[in-house]
Length: 330
Image 1 (spheres, rainbow, N blue to C red):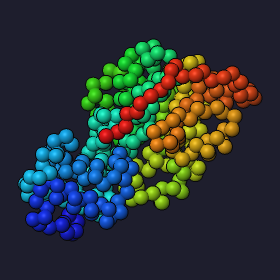
Image 2 (image 1 turned 180 degrees about the vertical axis):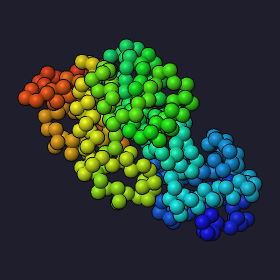
Image 3 (image 1 turned 30 degrees about the horizontal axis):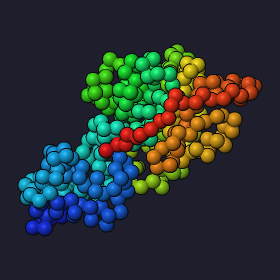
Image 4 (image 1 turned 60 degrees about the vertical axis):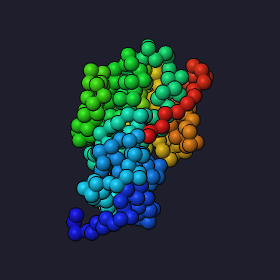
């Protein structure tokens, strides 16, 4: 307990509903920051209560009006203390996160899964590619927990997936998630800087990446919860573009002619357009209007990386039909 007092359990904290109301109020009073897989205090409180009681979300309503055992209530209040006082993210406290309706193990070795790719992998990205059954090799660069590699393998059932990360600790977590989803025979994990060990040796139908993209100066201004995540999963040089620069070069040598590179860049859309004014990037639509995921066709990327070669002038192929729907994290 590190000498910190824990809120005393009183008659007002008798039921599950009492505990949830108390937790929501404490989180608001403490000014905790959300966004690491949760939209607000209600989702985080439910997750912490489910973990303390050993129940899935779907089973929690049954306890809202029932008394909670003292031991379970104490577990919940301790989790809440760590969340509000120590600013430990909820996903680390419960050891898991959800993305695309799937459960993934997470801890302090990896960034907490959250990505616009969960919206785009099911329909939007495949619309720019040949039919899914003909996609045979895809890559997830900077895989972290391996969650996007798993989503790719499930979406493209005949494809082998190469997933890369520089962190051995992150790859250890990814290996557990790959095994948990029964995909050890289709997802191969590689410890390498961006695509260094793969570039030019294999050719891919699709390469995706949710890389570190925060400028170094941003780290100290992030909320305390975000600073609990591995800095290497967030920061990428002075301007945030270091990893993206290497990825553009290495992906150009690794895509099949019909292939595409898709990158999530957060707030760097304008910075990318300034850095590469001749590079044609299709910014894919996202539900919240951020539109910060860029798709680059193989031919456009090749034109960019060949010195003295003018930008491609042919039109980018239209997607194979209208992309609809979304698949958000729970």
